[in-house]
Every structure is written in C-alpha cells, then in structure tokens.
Image (cartoon, rainbow, N blue to C red; front, side):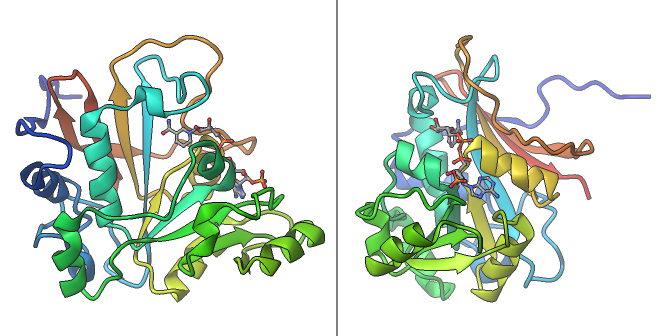
Length: 274
Ligand SMILES: NC(=O)c1ccc[n+]([C@@H]2O[C@H](COP(=O)([O-])OP(=O)(O)OC[C@H]3O[C@@H](n4cnc5c(N)ncnc54)[C@H](OP(=O)(O)O)[C@@H]3O)[C@@H](O)[C@H]2O)c1
C-alpha cells in the first residue's frame, strides 16, 4: 500500500532579497536542527533525526544539482546556484559549529574563512557559540597551497591521515596550519566525527564535494541532506553529488521540508529515517 499526495509540504517562501533578515529568519526556522544549545532565532526543529545524546554531532550536507543530476557546470557548482540557494547557504552556516569540506572543493571554489550573516550574531552569542563556524579541510595528499587564505585563521584545521606526505605536512606546519590526523591511510569519517565531538562541535555542516559526501554515506554518518535542485538540464560529463568506490547499502531518508521559489528552484531537506 502507498498513499499519493500532491506536492507534499511545498511551502511558498516569502518574497525578498537573499540577505533580507526576514527571509533569513524564516529559512532559519525551516532549517533548524533543534539542538537546544544551538538554536538560532529561537527556532525549533522540523523533525530531524538528531540523537537524544546532544554530545553526538549532527551531520548534514548541503549540495546543489541540476535536474539531470549534474553537480557542476563548467567545473564549478556556482553556475547552478541562485539567490534562494545562497540564502540557504548562509542559514546553514548560521546553524553550524563547523564547516567540513574536501580540500579540492575548498580550493576549486576559492573558499575563505566562513562568515555568518550579522542577522544571526546575537542568537549565536546568546547560545554561547563562536560568531562563525570553524573550518575543517579534509585532505589525504595535503595538496593545499601554503598561502591558502583560510589557513591564516586559527579556527581552521586540516584533517588528514598519518600516511600523508611528510614534506607537505612540514610545509603546512611551517606556515602555522593546524594539522590533525584522522586515520592511518585515509581520512576516516568516524574519526572526523569523533574529533568534531571532542572539539565541542555539535552541528557539523558538510559542503561537499562528491567524494567527501560519498565517504560519509558509506560510513553511514549522514543525518541530513539539504539538496537544491537547480532548474536546468546540463548533460556533459559532470558527476553526481556523491561517489565512492565502496559499496553501500541503501540509506533511507524522508523529505522533511520542500520549498520552491519564483526562480523555479526546489530546496529539499532530507532527513534520516528514524
Ligand atoms: N554541487 C555541489 O553542491 C558541489 C559541492 C561541492 C563541490 N562541488 C564540486 O565538486 C568538484 C570536486 O569534486 P570532488 O569529489 O573532487 O570534491 P571533494 O570531495 O572536495 O574532493 C575530495 C577532496 O577531499 C579530500 N579528502 C580527504 N579525505 C577524504 C575523505 N575521507 N573523503 C573524501 N575526500 C577526502 C581529498 O584530498 P586528497 O586529494 O588530498 O586525497 C580531496 O581533496 C568541484 O568541481 C566542486 O566545484 C560541487
């Protein structure tokens, strides 16, 4: 048996600019993770799978793909985004204690140190949180330029593995980078989760790319996927939002929020089935 419903939970978003405080607060409510210690704007969660044990980090990923599943256009995800997507990107960072991202994505997309809209400054302060999330760059090869801007921030960590090339480790350490081993031969998602917990990071935001998301899916550590469907067909040879050579059983999710806008984007919040 199954029960069909037309357009379940599709919510028309209020009309606004991407940095309009009203729309950011409305989105913050839709995307709250429900952690009492980390609430933004007093919002409550829209049914997440957050553990009762508040010490266990809640891990969610934010990705964008075209209607035909492409994760990039011209090698970058930026072409697929829109104003609503950028607003959600800000809101998810406002809810996060740390942004975890593959080093290749961070360098390809020209990452800086994460910032959070001033709209959420008071809420974060009241909740005893840092003004903005920290940044963790995952890399096995440590192929990260020594002058990569986020390395100047003491909140940035490079999560790598013990077999990482010693000369790259020394070069990055020499410019003051904080390097943490999370595994022997590869960066293990479980070790990343445990390190986040030990640092007191309860809301972890993964911003990709597909290799990073794939490894977390295989490790069964994805509590939530925030997926923007960009209203385009791309074809070409772009990959999917996740890949990993390791086989994984099907991981079941359910739609907890679906939002659309007048630019024809679809914003989906998929949470782990309890
Ligand atoms: N559409 C979207 O939402 C979206 C989001 C993000 C990125 N992208 C696009 O995706 C492309 C990059 O794809 P990608 O798959 O190469 O991105 P990626 O996931 O950032 O690439 C993997 C990077 O993470 C490092 N890594 C270390 N440990 C890892 C682990 N356990 N699991 C996974 N990665 C680990 C790798 O380091 P080593 O190489 O040193 O091993 C590598 O630098 C870019 O074109 C970017 O623009 C799209």
